[in-house]
Image 1 (cartoon, rainbow, N blue to C red):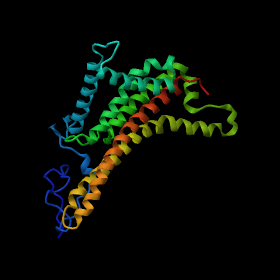
Image 2 (cartoon, helix red, strand yellow):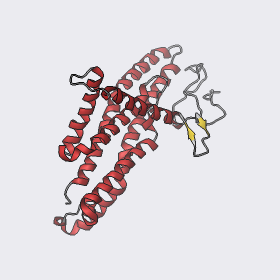
Image 3 (cartoon, helix red, strand yellow):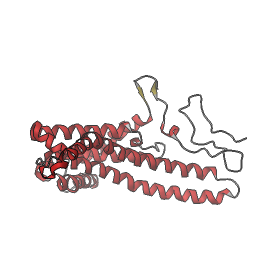
Image 4 (cartoon, rainbow, N blue to C red):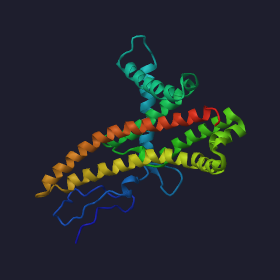
Length: 279
């Protein structure tokens, strides 16, 4: 009989692996699954609408770290910056010049720099929790967080579109109105309408969520496999699996930064589209 993975009374609390569970020891491989993304409330009850769990704690800590970092860097700015101010300025300038100015333009984009910088560093830090010891979980792998951020961008984009162009102009902007399309214009407008108003916020959120979800699952898979294979001849395979853990961790570092960049890149693209002249 194969041993089942250890579980507590609460089905959401499935352990990643048993410490005595190895290959060739009548123990099935405890593969990661949806249970790896569920957490007991730190306080409150999961059945109620009022509780606080690990992902919320990480999101709160991440926000405090970001605010604390920039406050410490800029509370007493100097003409010749110190190391902390230099790092903060480099990060801020990267988003401002490399993303906002490049897509929206300096004149129109300046007012949106604080929002875009905040989104970039928040998403990046939420992603980075995946490789931080003890935390070891990307907050953005929970769909509610990318969805909440995408909703903020969506509301901003729609409100800017109507504010800049009025009702008729906004309708043309959102539907991609172009009379040169001739007979296919109604079909093109219908597709654009549903694509922009329904599909756009969905893909904006899911792109970030799916990458972090998949990356964390792969890290878990190779980490658990490294431990599970530590028995007999399986030790040789455990070494290969551990190398994959290192490789995947380095790769995740790259993906985490890229996904934060892509998220704000799309945000600026949407803002620029809202400010652009109607087609």
